[in-house]
Image (cartoon, rainbow, N blue to C red; front, side, top):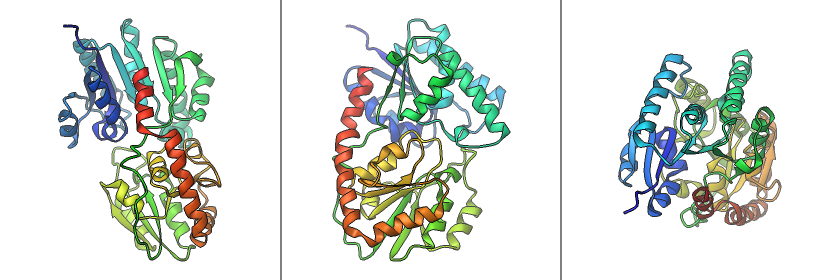
Amino acid sequence: MKNKKKILYIVNVDWFFISHRLPIAIEAKKRNYDIHIATKITKYNHKLISHGFKVYDLKLSRKSQNPIGIIFYFYNLMMVIFKLNPDVIHAITIKPILLSGLASFFLKKTKFIYAICGLGFIFSSEGIKSNIRKFFILNLYKLILSNKNYKIIFQNKSDMKVISKVTNLNSKNSLIINGSGVDLNVFRPLDFDNNTVNILLASRLLYSKGIKYFIDASKSVTGANFNIAGSFDYENQDCIPKNEFFKWINNSNVKFLGEVKNMNKLINKHNIVVLPSFYGEGLPKILIEAAACGKAVITTDHPGCKVSIINNKTGILVPPKNARALSEAIQKLVDNPKLCKKMGDMGRKLAEQKYDINTIVDKHLYL
């Protein structure tokens, strides 16, 4: 019997794989691939094991810049790679891409797929330290992409342009896939009786997700309830401290819902979904989920965010870091429920055309 081909997924942390790549791995297993995942294991590991995947623990803090920790991570990663001898390595997010890219110089027969899910916090931050890190990271990309045995996936043209500027990126080796996809049978419009207009921001609680601007904008809007759903991502150096976040909340009319599991139900209880992000987004999952649920979207004219909607058709774009423009856009939809509904309906059609999980999965498995 012919041996199954092995795919090794490398990703920062298990919960991200579950939320953004699980359907791809499940379908690959159905097509007779042997699935292995190297990641930082948390309380969600059992979900991966339950699907018959083999999981390897790679301990590295996502906010750590400690060279010794990174070297130790790279050593453990190489041990997993040499043990498995995978046919395909699919690396997701910056550190796994850069470190597996270095490993590619030792693995001539292995095919590599690099998935850039946005350029991340480093590329949305400012200052001397951030500029030095950007320079270092871009030159690492230049090095690893000089080895031609790869395909690289982007989620938007802006990220592709940034990487292309510093590398000899071959167009035959690169492509754009519209985010992580959404299950249109799960995320679909549901009927809820709302006595008032409900506004939702659902995100990790990071500064660069624009949460403070959302809270400030809420103070100028009448006729609506404002909710935030999300969790504190303590391993991200951009995470808002708890005491600071709750100080913002306590001085506002915004309700904090905490981490919510049933996102489809949560989104459908709201009329408008807002993401005022200036983070280095790829294509935010919450925005394509909102579109699939038939909700109008307000987001920023920022790479990743702006490609998720059709401006003034499925939602409204506003400048980043501008609470006044954000409040005006929200008030416009609050005061025009027919326009809000029309945008939501068009958003659903957009999701059906571009974000269907089946199409996204097929594109990955084709690679």
